[in-house]
Structures are given as C-alpha cells and as structure tokens.
Length: 115
Length: 114
Image (cartoon, rainbow over all chains, first blue to last red; front, side, top):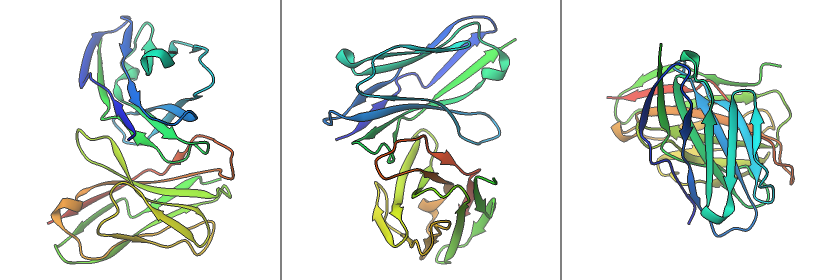
C-alpha cells in the first residue's frame, strides 16, 4: 500500500524563524517520486519540488531546502527565515512506479507565519 | 498557454442531480487526472487517463464517470450527486510515456451538494 503521513497538522511560527515540515512515506516500489506542493489561501496548487527515489541528494532553492532520507522513508521540507507569504497548506505526495503521474497525498500541514 | 482550465469555479447541486465538471489543457499532455480535496484528507485520485480513449480508476471512483475523447479534454461526470460529493475538485495534467514531470493543476471547482 502507498501512504504519506504528515504528522504536523498545523504549525505556527513567527517571521524569520526556521520551520521544518515532516513527511514520511510508505511504498513497496523501488522506483517512485516524491513531491511537495504549496496551497496558498487562494486555493491553487503550486509545485515546489520533485525527487526520484534514486536521487538522495538534498536540494536547496533559495530559502527552501529538502532532506530526502530513504533509510527513514522521509522527505522533509525546511523553510529558512520564514515570511508571512509562506503561510499556506503544504502537501507532500508520493507517486509510485516509473511514471510518477498518480499522486498519493498526505493530509497536509497548515503553516501560519505571524509578523 | 492557458495551462489547465476548469469550469465552473463554483457549483451547487441538489441531491440526485447530475452534472459534468469540465477540464481542458493546451500543453499536449498525455496524462490527465481528477482529484478531490476534502478537509484534513489531502487530495485523493478519482480517475485518470494515460491518453485519448484510455481511462482508469483511482482511489475513490464511485459515483463518478470519465471519458477522454481528445487529448485536450477530460470531463468528470457526477451521475447522481450526493452530499458526500461536496468537495473541491482539481484536474491535473502532465507528460506521460515514461517521462515524469510535475503535474500541472487547474484552479479547482468547489462543489456543494445539498
């Protein structure tokens, strides 16, 4: 079975704090893809990152960074120096298999950044 | 490119009514899919298509039908609406044929069934 668990339902931080959103996944497939999406209050889904199961390199993009650890089946997302505009719901998703086109989403983490 | 478009943006139905949610993409994507988003549950896959004429069920297909007569369009039909189908519906598209790209999502349709 495929499953994604985002244990943090809601996180509140003050601007400029660093925050890490946790994501743990389950799959029996050896090839799979992991994603993070952002859903701001306006409701659209914004793609942030895709990572395949063979690439465990961590990635940094501006204030965003991702830590992929196959040994613990985790794909955590860190925002450094958070800003109010980071307030959103963040979804981690798994796509098993080689095509990476059918997503299994976690329940999402609501991030509130206060000024 | 308009990307992925969905109509309508909002809809209210009465129990038992039927309707079609429209989805279109202009990126020549092979893969298209429908998800529903319910509070506290993330998004769940309803149906998907890997190309014109080919569709398959996702995690929560009951009560919904799809067809894919063209590459561009992937309508979702509610046969007899039920209050449990109150949700936000997202259509998504992506390249297929062994290439894994991120899925592009439409803006969503908020459906209320009374």
